[in-house]
Image (cartoon, rainbow, N blue to C red; front, side):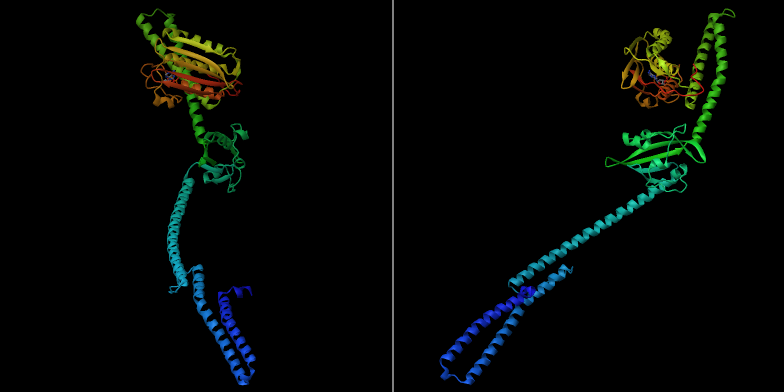
Length: 509
Ligand code: ADP
């Protein structure tokens, strides 16, 4: 009923009927009233004719109203049809009303809107197509990159595991699965700690706070080291592991672990160490004998030597001494590298230890007229270190300072306490180390290009040994040097002391 009266057509029809019929009904009523007033003038035939006339007029009015309302609302219906077609997506539908009245205006406005909509739609479609094409290209590129990454991952000889930032495995390559003996098990989504339990050299699992994932998480930088792993059918074997954070938009999104089974390398290293150790050992006996014989000769125990003979034997004794130093250094390095060295920490008085080293260097210091400064923090507690090893550290650093400082220079030793460590500093005003060579300073056999011709006495093994000793005593070593101005070496030792280590050899001196 409601929608019936909502129709414009019906409304118009009603209006036309009301406006057409009401005047006519009034007119008919007036006529009837007139007939009533003058009955003598009226016959039945007049009434009948009047009745026909009234019915005819009423029917004509209804017909005219119907036709008029229909004619008036026809364009509206057409518009509704076209609007509906456009709404349904037919953007070519247009209203075909060309009249100049308001309806014609509405039709033109609508047709203009439809034209604009069509253009907008077309340009939108073009843009969507462009974007879709670009997106498709991107997806293709990503797929190609992914395929490339997967191919690289497969072909890499190292084991690779990628985790998310919760430590759950997201990806692993075949080599990783083989090394870790997963045997076809799927570890994707599982915690790294359950799929790769690293151990120390004694087979003790690495504690959670030293776990590589946790270290990377805490430091947000790469961490590497040698760890051990075992399988049911394979006892402990070494792995070199590098763990790096995966950073995306300055946020850590995971960790990449790259690792390699270094059993063979370790074996080769062990054989090399054994060889060096054996050769050094064999050389020590004849060298000691030569030293002994030259000392006898120089002392004149087997007859007086003339000055020339004395000079020659003296040279032989000196060169022999250098050979003994080299052989000892090689022997010590092979012992340290093999991990067989004993670390036997005992409460040690550091100032006293330094004094002993300085006494042994006293002659050289005096000969070069070097000015020596020693400043040691008062009431320094005894520290639990292996005195034999740490003496070697001071001895090397101080003898380098003496060796690489020209006559009349200064050398100083400072000892201080800093956040759980005791820090020793050895500074000189010597030749310094060329900046481009500084990264090689702790490498075996490195000798500075600025000193090889000035100071021939050296084998480039001292600092390597020093670094190995400091690190195996739980400390760290670093330096600063300026060419032509001097160098400073620092090393720290933990105040709580070094950890003892069982082994089967000690340093030879
Ligand atoms: P060596 O002194 O027997 O050559 P080291 O391993 O002790 O071996 O030192 C390696 C090299 O480092 C030296 O040859 C020298 O070039 C440089 N170096 C070490 N200490 C100093 C120093 N205090 N001043 C200048 N150069 C130094």
